Image 1 (tube, rainbow, N blue to C red):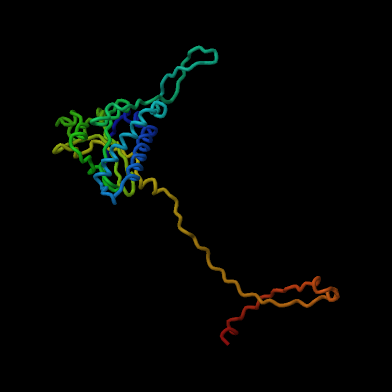
Image 2: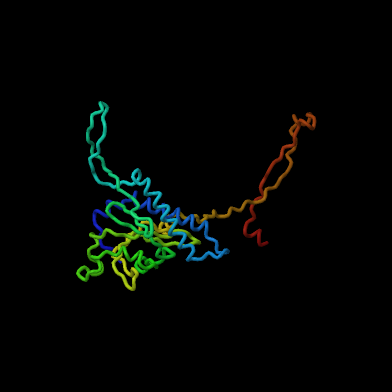
Amino acid sequence: MESPSPGELFERTFNPATTEILVRSLRRAYGTACEHHEPERGGNEATFGYGLYHYAVHELCLEAERASDEVTEHVTQRQVIKNVTSRRVTNDVTSCKVTMAVSSKRPLFRLQIGPYEVACHRVGLSERESIWTAFPKNEGAALSMMEEQFRMPLFGFGGGVESARKLILAHLGNADEGMRAVYLCIPGKTEGGRITGWLFARPIFRADEKTAAAPSTKQVLLPEVVVEEPTVTLKSKRTDEAALPPEVAATELVVTRKPKKSAHEATG
């Protein structure tokens, strides 16, 4: 299913530097959740998912604290610098910082990235699941990310995506394999208090795509080479070696090979 274009503002905000921060935050959260998952002590998918949510919030909050030094968007701006005479001058550069801050931690976690409000929810277990049928299971928290303009019949499903300013960082994974996929999604449809449709979905990580490019390790065997058994004989001493004592006159080995038999001799 094709996603409508989210517009230039979205592309500038969620550039590779931004998405890498989101992905690595979730990767660490999954690592912690998997490490502390103990089925033998009663752990299950519900306890794993509950812990994962709070680990993800923790990691995203840490990234937000240092994002001002790491996240850049690839547009031209005027940056003020000082020259060697300490006079203030301007210089054109090709990047400017995207702001990232936690706008709400409790009761609902919300991350502000540029002009976009972002929530974070697990929506499935595997990258093999279609994102178009994978949605948050909770009621209320994710539903609040549905914007009013998309509830209006005027737009309908799939309309007005460039005006969206609320996104869900939707991730899929499990306790055995860890994080499997991450998407940026815009809710577009609700039913019964839950999100039931995406207006837009952009993959920013898929585990199968990272492993698909791995080189083949198939072993290549060389053809077998048959070597005939050699015949070992003693070489007769030379006349000048006959007078030498035994410890000096070493016996020299001569290796000769048996002649191959013809087809007639082999059958005779």
